[in-house]
Length: 139
Image 1 (tube, rainbow, N blue to C red):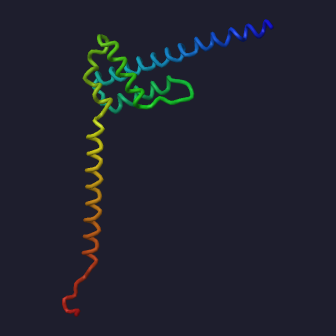
Image 2: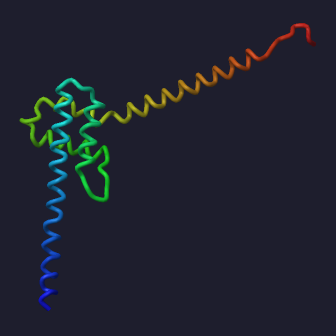
Image 3: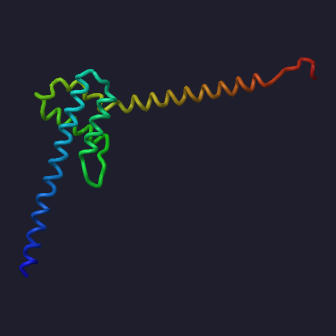
């Protein structure tokens, strides 16, 4: 009976403490990820290398069954920069690059596809035309 009571108390304690430990580690990972991103950008690095470094750190620090998506990592960086505005005041100008204009990207992708298709059609036409030989005297 005594064992049952101790187990009965142990489960609620674990249930209360486990989420707090998990959220604290995520918050620290997002905070340091923001620090990595902002420091690299302020140091003159391009967006891609800064983002990859911060994202890989956040991904590596978050344990558990589920992976951190790029959108979640970007949200963590933005939240940290906004929450600690005084500390990351130099980084606010770089936040827009974390969420690129999706509409513009789709439009650019469509234009690129169309350009490639036109090139392929032109190559086919040129190839077909160059392979044809005209004999003016063949009737």
